[in-house]
Amino acid sequence: MIENHFLLALREVMGESATEEVIEAWTEAYAVLAGIFIDKEDDLYHQQQDKYGWTGFKTFLLFRRYSESSDITSFYLRPTDNKPLQAYLPGQYITLKAQLTDGRQIMRNYSLSMSPRDDYFRISVKRHVGMPCQQAGVMSNLLHDRLHDDDLLLVSPPVGSFVLKRHDTVNHPVVLIAGGVGITPLMAMLQSGLVQDSKRSFTLIQLARNDEVLPFYEELSGLAETYPNLHWHIRLSQPLTDDHNKQIHHSEGYIDHALFKQLSLDLQADYYLCGPPAMMQNTVRLLHEYGVNGSSIFIEYFGPYQQQPQARRFT
Image (cartoon, rainbow, N blue to C red; front, side, top):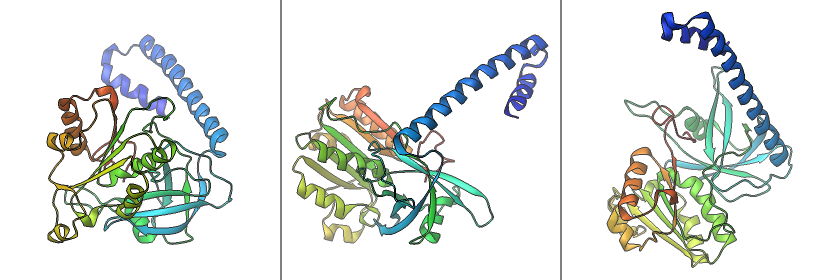
């Protein structure tokens, strides 16, 4: 079916140049490429089966919900077969499959927001309410409004290449820069990195509009108290009046060179960035101007599917 549509489109684009010889050559090329992708998909399935014990989707049970902020909720998922979960790489994500009330099935990708455990996964999802020019997040609202304890979800094995470099292969300082819900894969990186290497320096710059939408404050406070090699800085772009009274954040405004200098960021560090497109593009530009080599910057965009098609995780 796909091959037929491809060849029809090819004829339409090429017009009279699409001779039978050309179409035959493209048909053979398509068959070769299709075979390569099919073999690659088979390899991935075998790798998932060997590493995680399942391919495709497996049934998980929601056993806990926890509100991380006014718009982000963590969901704790346990496999119904009670088999131990194999360790994933910090920063990877899973895919959820759910059925809507009209019978349609949808799939969305969500980062695993804590270091690997053998008994459950945790994802932390922002509710996208939508705006005049942007549709509300179908899956995020389903999770927030319809998913309750003991409900079931279909979950794929963890995948993704936005992961923390192994500490035994590189010992550079680590700087994590998170915008809003973009902190979720960085939480897994931070927790794992702190446990694995107590001598390695970790800096977390957490960006949010205000305290109401600032996730993981209690959890990060515990990490900061436990690990002296963690330097944590909260910057709010639009603090509320009460935020000044609580004195939770460290600075105000948007990310800039002055903040980099204030924190004495190491030019030799590895930088992991995750957040909305505009924030990410600006931060990458600032890091380049600051003198950070592009090969030391690792990025992952977060955003609604229709706004950021190259994102690996959608909310």
